[in-house]
Structures are given as C-alpha cells and as structure tokens.
Amino acid sequence: MKIASKTALLAVTTIGFLMSGCSSQPKPLYNYGDYSESYYHSKKELTPDSALELQKAIEYSIENAADSRSARVAPGMYANLGYIYLKAGKTDKAIESFNKEKKIYPESAHFMDRMIKKIEIAEGKK
Amino acid sequence: MINKKLITLIALVGSILILSGCGPSYVTKGTEFPKMYEQAPRSILILPPMNESTDAEAKDYYMTTTEMPFALMGYYTFPTEMVSDIMKQEGVYDTEILYNMPLDKYYEYFGADAVLYTRIKKWDVSYMVLTSSLTISIEAKIVSTKTSEELWKYTGTVVVDLSGGNNSGGGIGGLIASAIATAVNTASADYVQYARTANKRIIYTLPFGPYHEMYMKDQSVQLIDQTPAKQ
Image (cartoon, rainbow over all chains, first blue to last red; front, side):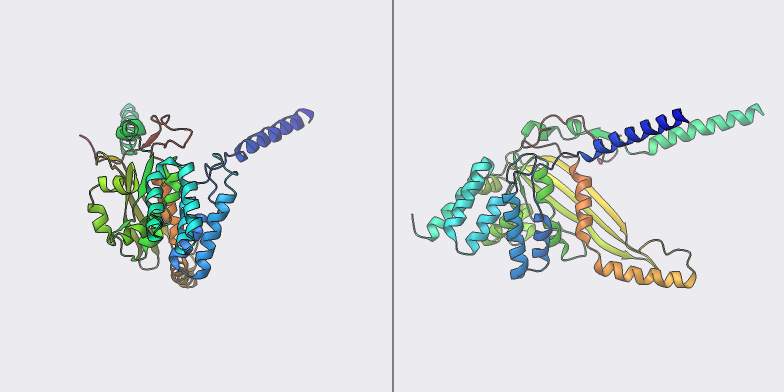
C-alpha cells in the first residue's frame, strides 16, 4: 500500500513536470496582436469602423512590441502606420513613421526614402 | 504447413516493402533549396496573389494572411496592403502584369532582395449529395530580384469537411440534419482560417531568414519532397 502510494506520487510529479515543460513555449518573434484579423476585416468590408480597428491593431502591435522574443516592432508596422497618416493628410507624422521603419529595418530604407521624397515633392519643399 | 508459413512470411515482407515505398519521401531544406542559402535574401516583397480559383474574393482575403508567417520566419516583409496600393498608383492594376514584370524593377523601386509570388490554385467548395468540402490549395514561390532565379517553392493544400460530421446513422432525421448543417456551415464558414492552415503547411519548408535565431542553421530540417519522381 505504501509503495503503491509512493509510485502514484512519483507518477503525479512526473506528469506535473512534463506538463510544465510543455506550457513554457517560447514567445513569438514579434507581437502582432490582432493585426491579421483586423486586416482581414478591413478587406472583407472597408468601413470607417474596420479601418479604425486596423489602425488600433497596428498601434497596439507597436506599443506592445517589447512583449515578444525580438522585442522589436514587427516589419512593416511603422510603414503601415505612416501610410495611414499619409492618407489622412498628416504628412509630418507619416514621415516620422517612415523614418522609424527605416531605422529598425535598413532593408526598407530604399522604399521609405522613396515615400518621403514623394511627400516632399507633393508639398513643394524641394 | 511449412509452405503456408513461408507464404505468410513472404506476404508480410512484401507488404512492408510496398508500404515503406508508398510513404512520402523526405528531403532537407539544404539540399532542396540551396540557392536560398547561397543568395541569402534579407527582404521579401509579397506581391498580390494570382487567383486561379472560382472564388473572386479569395484574392483579397488570402492577401491578408501572408505577411505575418514570412516575417515570423525572419525576413523583412514589405507591408502588403501599402505595396499593393502603391503599385496601383503606379498604374499596375492587373496581377498578370505584376507576374510578367522584369524582376529588377522590384529591386529598383522597393529595394527588395526577393519577390514572393502566391498562386491560389483552389479555394473552392465542392458539393456532393449530402456533404460538401472546401479545398484551399496555395502555391508559393520566392524568386531573386538580382538573378531572377527561383530560390524556393512549395505548395500547401487543406481539405475541410464542411458537412458538420457526426450526423451519420440518424435515419431520415439524421440525413435532414446533415443537409441543414451543410448549408449553414457553408454560409458561415470562415475560409481564411483554413488559408492560414495551408500557409503553415508551406512555411515550415522555408529556410529561416536573418532576423531568426535559426538563420543559416536549419539546412538539415526535413520536409516532404514535392518534386516529381526523379527516376
């Protein structure tokens, strides 16, 4: 009887260890939040509401970037935000976001510079 | 008696041989996609998908599913919606044009090392007498913008039974319930989640990119060989 209960305890402990081992999964590389879902909703039906939902998802993903394995803002997120600002006519904020994208991801520099130049030409700055 | 045993043994060995031959054959990332490791693209420009399915909306919906998985594999992915908008502003509306564009244009305009082409081969519901099933099949291909070479290609397919299951054996009542379930599930089915599953069946075969811890360390990872028989 005693041996049986010891065995049972051992079994329970082992299962406990195994389960805790399974639950400690690594965090994803980036924190996307609801970006994919919101992007889909805005494609399914583009309304002021779904557009706002997408913008909020992007902002959430940026604000909570630290909660990820890379602790970096995901690729394209600042560019997405900048593009939303650009469409809303907030060109200063657009340029600011495009520069942030460029700083985190040098791979985007060429494209971001092109966007910034477009804005400057449209505004007649240069 | 001995003969009988011998026959059984031969049959057993034979069936094992046949069975092992019938399973999928595996290759590694390193041997299947060596150019991906040689050219080591850092950035991928995801182009709007080419839709060959019967569902006109599949293109817009599928487009929302590709950015995340490729970024999570460690590549810089250009934001798909913005890129597609910019291309329209540049006068490129038709996916056909996109797919026939010289690849160095993408390097020139976006600075992208590689381009991702996706082809929606199937996004269709097929109806049988009392059941229906959804098939989503996606072919994905990465091509270098510098050498125009194909670096990686894989296809993922998902087949989903939309008939609601568990209604068998219920007599006439069961059959009717099953038919109703078919109609309801088809109308409300969220196909995009299945497209994401198809992506998962594709993405595991892609060598990791520079922003991933496993970059250049995953050559021995196995995947199911999709190239036609080489004999």
